[in-house]
Amino acid sequence: MYYIIAYLQGAAIPEEMPNAETMEAMQELESGGGTVFTGSTADLFAELMEE
Image (tube, rainbow, N blue to C red; front, side, top):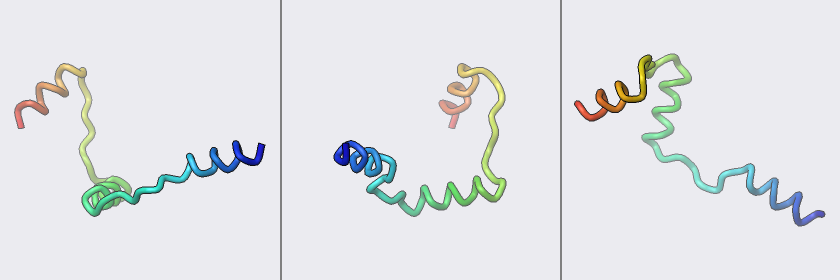
């Protein structure tokens, strides 16, 4: 039982830290930045392929 609890506690905590680019993006989202897309999945992929 102790082994299972220790395993589950370890699984809940990621071992790797996000890189600087990811951290910057997360801070941007937390401060209200970012882009919201509304539309179909096909429209999203079409827009992504344009860039």
